[in-house]
Image 1 (cartoon, rainbow, N blue to C red):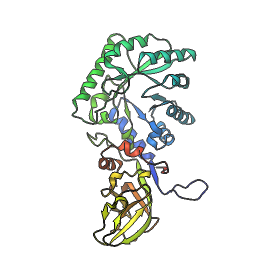
Image 2 (image 1 turned 60 degrees about the horizontal axis):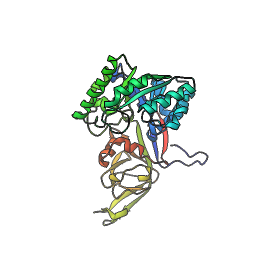
Image 3 (image 1 turned 30 degrees about the vertical axis):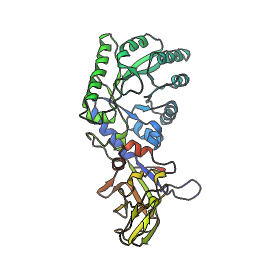
Image 4 (image 1 turned 90 degrees about the vertical axis):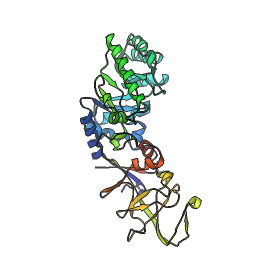
Amino acid sequence: MAKVSGSGLKRRVRVEIDLGALVRNYAKIVEHVKPMRVLCVLKANAYGLGVGPYAEALAKAGCRDFGVAEPFEALELLSVLRRGKCAADVQILSSILPDEIAPMVKAGVILPVTDLATAKLISDAARMAKTTARVHFKLDTGMGRLGILAKDALETIRAVKKLPALDCEGIFSHCPMAYDPKDPFTKRQIKLFKSIVAACAKEGISFRKVHMAASDAINNFPATAKSPFTMVRTGINLHGSFDPYGRKALKVEPVLSLKTRVAQVRELPAGTTLGYGRTWCLAAPTKVATISAGYADGLPLALTNRGFVFIGGRRCKIIGRISMDYTTVDVSDVPGVKAGDEVVCFGSCGRDSITPDDWAELKGTHAYDVICSLGSRVQRVVVG
């Protein structure tokens, strides 16, 4: 159990990160898509879990391609990799702003080209720094968020290729519907993207890194892990989670366990109502435990009167509305439960388990949302 430095106190809530499971998941993804390169997405501080341990473990496992969303993430990740003496690439996958370009070029970060104007600024910064900047063309084939529109792609690529001090090593796109294996839109996106790559090839323009698949596409659209593609990106599958829809082609395992402790156990009479809004009324005398975690720690309100936790090796139903700091559960079937006992909010318990995917289904969202919602007072603890 993690302690607060210098105080001797144990944190009430912690998320345990199994780096052994993380590395095994990475190895399974590599095997599934070989000979593709695998880029590990560690944006938002590895989804709020701590980029340092993730990057170190994955780099030791052989990962040489990492993706982030913005410059500060890139610099932090580079610092981790350099401390570990790992020569890996760090790529910004989203956008780059004008004032961010020069420091990123100097740091050697791979940058996205989202338009000709951005490419010119990157070229100018590289010439000023007397270096060559590595870039990937970011194509908007249907995401509608960032990038070069498909209709403008070939013309823009031609123009950028003429600029000095640029290594146009890659081209990529992103899919908004890849979680649905029956979705025709994704199939059209893949066809469109491949046609642009083919048109470039006819003009003698080739790319060492060609990528479109993120975790959903790896599972649902295997064509994105075959030629002309050379690389895939993975984020949520590293954690052993999936989008609630679609296939689960990758046999990955959960990496995370969220744990807390029992605050109090009471025998409450029939007719007692629990929590804000009095959403649960006890039909009979019931042994109720109050656990030391609530929505500030990442427990979704959607678990109210529907979710479960593990206490004493048993599934215990959440009863009453989840509050910011506490949650009440029915422990009638747990003998000897007392204050201080461990509670597994999600994780494994014998052959049974509760996962972020289970929470996401109840919340009507996806596992990214659940993982990124773990609160700042939740201790991140590396195990395995």
